[in-house]
Image (cartoon, rainbow, N blue to C red):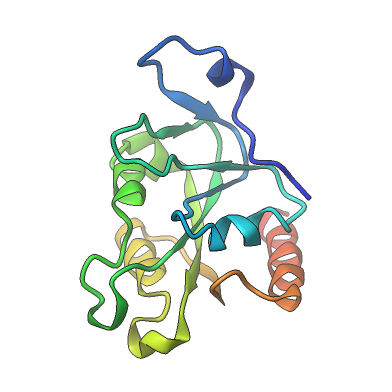
Length: 152
């Protein structure tokens, strides 16, 4: 089990100084922690985008894959979490984004993992995988293998 990590400089940062990470996997998880539960099963260093939009966002220092859920239910309106939008509004973060992995709920039909499709299209990166809620052990195995192949 991996623990979300933030670089040493971020842990000792001054108030207002941005969080920095060189983790190859960055994720956002809502208060339900479904995405967090999934990511912590992966044998990959990761960093979590803060839950509250009022908090400073992460700043990526190296290429990464972004994992996040879809919001908005059946309508799809507001599908991309505001925290993810704030993170991607940092130009350096967008430039270092290499792919996305979407979390969703199949109960929402056509909007299942819609946020991943939106971000992938806007940032010209691939959707690498989609999983439901907190994923299954098969999802963990597939993502682990897929990330290994993706980064080589």
